[in-house]
Each structure stands twice: as structure tokens, then as C-alpha cells.
Image 1 (cartoon, rainbow, N blue to C red):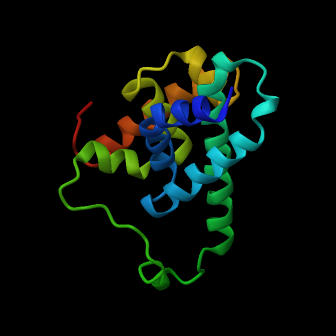
Image 2 (spheres, rainbow, N blue to C red; image 1 turned 120 degrees about the vertical axis):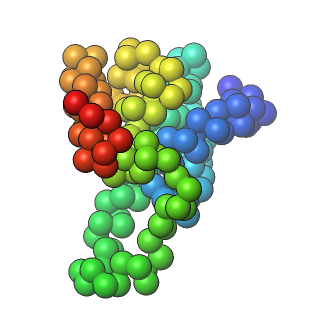
Length: 161
């Protein structure tokens, strides 16, 4: 794969890369994660064995970069709860839907699985390749993520059982 083809494939998946990063990070960190993932993919391109798997490979690199940023933010998190607002925490706009707010309350891993399967329409096999887990494990994680979302929506009074 040459430089032009690489750039074209990255541009084609740009929206999806942002969606993945946004499910895990705040908007201010998304661009950093995407840029680091694309750079790492370019540097490691010779290691890609199957060009048909490029998209899943790039998404996996992005997920790893997002996890790296989350670990760094966790280490740097202020211990005083009063300093969180001063640290620039992004607050959701007031017009966000209840579903968006409920999704935001979930762990990044849960949001990622729900986004990939329900919003982007990836199959379980494709998601398993992206997140590097066996399909049975993925099914259980997706099931639990749906249950957590349902619980969060019930807590907010959006659905009734």
C-alpha cells in the first residue's frame, strides 16, 4: 500500500474513527488519539499482513490509543472533586437527548460496543476483530452493555419495565 492509498483509506474512515474516539474520550482528546493512531498505523504499515483487514487494524490501533489516553488522564486526575470543573471537564449541552446522556454515563468500552454494533452496523465477527476478543466473550459484553444502558434509562425515567 502506497502513501496515497493509505491517505485515501484513512480519509474514507475518518468519520468512523472520530465516532470511536468520541465514545471513549472528550472532544479535546479525540483529535490527539486519531492523529497518534494514524501515525502509528503509517509507521507499522509493513507489519499489516492483509490489506483487506486495514480498517479493523486501524480501528484497533485507535482503541489502543484511546485506552492509553484514558490511563494517562486517570493518573493525572485531580483528587479534589471541586477541581474537576476547573480542569476543563466537558459538560454535555442541555439539548442532548436522554439516550445520549444515558450512553455518556456508561463506561467507554460499553459505548464503543453499542456504537459499533447498533449505530454503525458492524457484525459481531467484525467487532470481535476490532476489539480483539472472542465472539462468545463479545456477545456477553454486548449483552451486559445493553443491560447497563437499559438500567441507566430506567434510572432516568425514560423507560418502564
